[in-house]
Length: 261
Image (cartoon, rainbow, N blue to C red; front, side, top):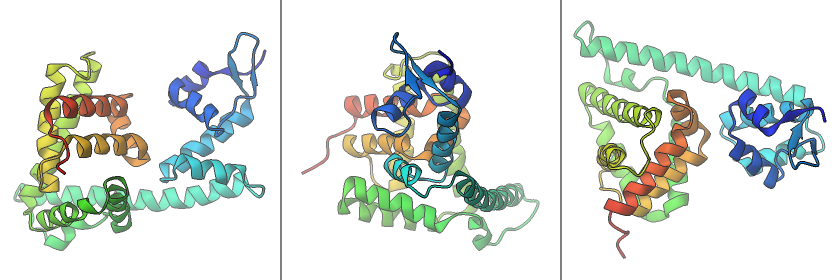
């Protein structure tokens, strides 16, 4: 039987076998055929559909909306690619601006130049931040709004050095999670819990409130569900998103308090 097996598609695309099985189960990406041996086989049309799924995920679409878009009678793959190219080109320009902001901040911190406070935030996407905050409210309810406002106020009042240190702390924690994954340490091991403990402290400082088990595990699920977070962590190490989420859940169950009330 011709075609690509699920393992071959996973290797080609970087999408896990587990995710491909899930896409099949929800009707998002059905194989071209299933052999007598039970193996799924994908043809070129399925590979192109998977590419569209990944493009839409990169642009922040949830899986259910992607299925509706791709299955719409008037869906035009060429037109979709052109529209996606325009959006990605706009994102590329924004990332260039963010890189420039990082360079200017580093130069200011090292004493080479002075930096206007407004320039610290050039390139950030207010709509994207608003979407993150909306997702937190959807996930946890109105009770998280005071924490969001407190977090906004905290970051607005931070100096350049404090912002840079906060970013550096997050980078170091993520790098240590990646090293633990690559070293084969179990996500629920004490060594990984020590990293999660630092992460929970960092999250608590960002939220201006120590995370509960429920909220910390909810954040882990947000990382799994959101394509932008997934892209960030997978860029560090393949499989880091699932590993990080598993470590956060294990740590929350062992050490964080339950939600009050």
